Image (cartoon, rainbow, N blue to C red):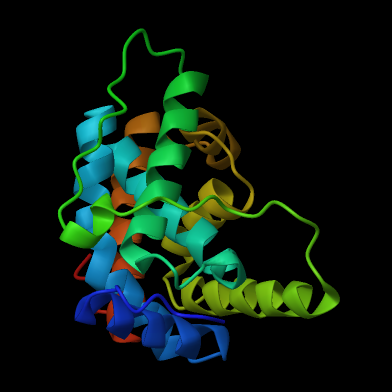
Length: 204
């Protein structure tokens, strides 16, 4: 795949990390997550103005990006591509919530992010790509499995089963506020796993 020689040194470094991820290097996924977690979160937070929603959407953006790495074109900066996925996902979320107003003018934090945004191919995956996607799904489930049972179950219901907070509360017979509080903690622990490949001891 041809790499644009106009890419910055940062963008070229990102491309090397992406290549490692595509080849199955789990540490590469963690590097990309750690590098862009905060910037994606704050970009989304600016759009939705809700901390909990922003956390959810941030994780969703990384999940979608990691599942579509084969569609990434090194003609553009990885950060641009990732932020576009995050912004599109957030816009879809806002539309579903039937928001009255929303600003689509997202300010990116890196010079590369002003480059042309390439679209994501929507074609049918090849058998090889199906295998790669399955490997990534397995990778995420292995990391989630490291959480304590109550946190693992919450993550599974929210992100794998795609239940709403209200549906989770009903399913587990616990208050809605408890669901939100424990999911916040679960996401923190999962982020720590993805960043450091180890789980911090939960003090509770």
